[in-house]
Length: 151
Ligand SMILES: [Zn+2]
Image (tube, rainbow, N blue to C red; front, side):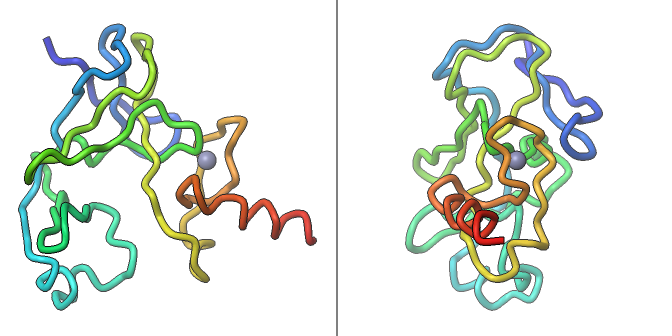
């Protein structure tokens, strides 16, 4: 049985939803794509927006481009309070449950964007209690909180 199904998302566009209860640590879905060299991703204009949303760094040499229809994991939305995380094993990338997930819950993970000057171009709509309003990796969110306080 498939652990997830594709459904209209509460966060943004389409998303992936748990099809059954999923235990913490379960491998849910492979983040499928094309392995390309880091050099390619640095020189190909396709990846020129600084935050290529579907691009994962595997190691020093290789990136994975997941911008393909067959990669259903690309539909997983970012959340500031996610229930999944993404790990690489060899040249493969998997989405794991980082907590117990109940049937019907939307799957999400932290996109891991760095905080930089264009963070406002990536608003977050996860509506979780921890939401900082923008898609920024957990370790950098204090910068946004700090900005809000200064206003
Ligand atoms: Zn959020």
